[in-house]
Amino acid sequence: MMKKWSLIVLSLLVVIALSACSGNSESNSSSSNSGGNSGAAKGKITFAFWGAQSEADAIKQAIDNFQKTYPDIKVESQWIQKDYLTKLQTMIAGGTTPDVMLISGGDLPGFANAFQELQIDKSLFSSPSFVDSMSVDGKVYAEPFIIKPKVMAINVDLFQKNNIPLPSQTVPMTTEEFKDISQKLTSGEGASKIFGSEPLWLGNWIYSFGGQFYTDDLSKSALDSPEAIAAAEFIVSTKQEGIVPNDSEKQGQNMMNWYLGGRIGMFTDFGPWYLPQMADVQNFKWDLVPFPGNGGSKEVNGLALSKSSKNAEAAKLFISHMTQNEEAQKIIGGNKNAYGVPVIPSATSAFEAVAPNKNMAAFVLAAEKQHTQEAQKSTNEINNEMKAIDDTTPIGIGTKDVKEVFPQVAEKINNILQQN
Image 1 (spheres, rainbow, N blue to C red):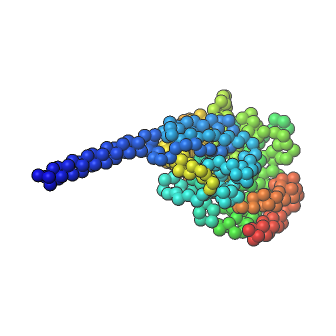
Image 2 (image 1 turned 180 degrees about the vertical axis):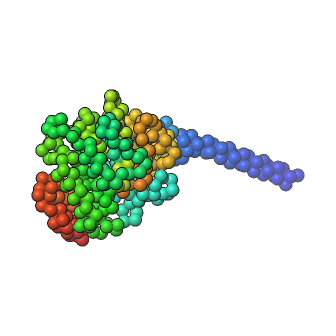
Image 3 (image 1 turned 90 degrees about the vertical axis):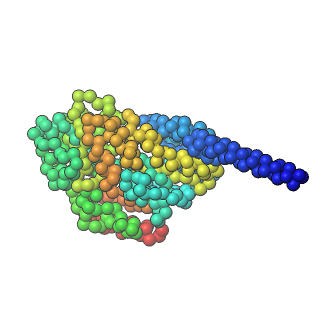
């Protein structure tokens, strides 16, 4: 009898224990699902970023979206309006590094030592090049967040006035076609002269001629290549022929204001940061077309995680949400501020809808196809050597032949690269 009662009591204890386990399992499951499946991630993280007011507004809206999804995580915004990189360096050196930092692919090599290496699936993004631009020596140190490519804006009124057919919205014009159209658009003289284009920037046009700043492995300068020199000579020729403003004409002038004022037919250095300004423009017909010759370069901005973050799990969750969540990406790229092109395919339609009557698809195509910024660790020293191009050749204020100067600059840059 005693054994029978012992078995009954044991059975009851087992049932109670199983019930308790089942109850705890439901409780844990419910807890993990609250706050957007944040699990154990909670507390505060800091996020540093730069940008104009319109860009900051878009980022803050995306942060609000994250915090609604994950109420257990508080994000402290650190909007740095001036000298972002310098202040970021100061914070890192002083031990007050933000948990998450906005960084461009061009600046990444100089800061990678302060960031945690990330494991990222390239297939999540519109182009694998986005992730490649967030890499240093084969390791990924930031997750793609937003893309800022270059396209060309055209003055439709000037094209129609001069009986020039509008360029293709999908196929880039050749560099020869660009010069021919620029010549046809140029007219008048003095303060009322109309120019085919604003002054051309080597940083865009070197790619139009199939050149680049460095070899593919980034080990040497490519400024001495025939393609780079051809791009330089083309830029010089546009100045000499008067189809772009010369140095005295452009001195102290805002070229975008000239474009909006009808004095420039094609604005080649048009990035998405101009879109908020264009939204308020009236009585001016404009549109967007691809950059000539597949030129232009895209700036890829990513979110990096500090090595010293004390709340890395929450920070990783924040980075993942801001870069991969469709709603967050639509906020960044699809509101009136149009901060840039979203990095995931499902959000690009929202970006194109910002200006439904314009060829916004040119930006999306450029984001996928354009050359990414070429970055080096010794950016300041290299930039100092690059100044010789503006100082000594007709690209800037000098008179020396680019065929002479470019190889000299390339050699000096190579000496810097060999020291790294």
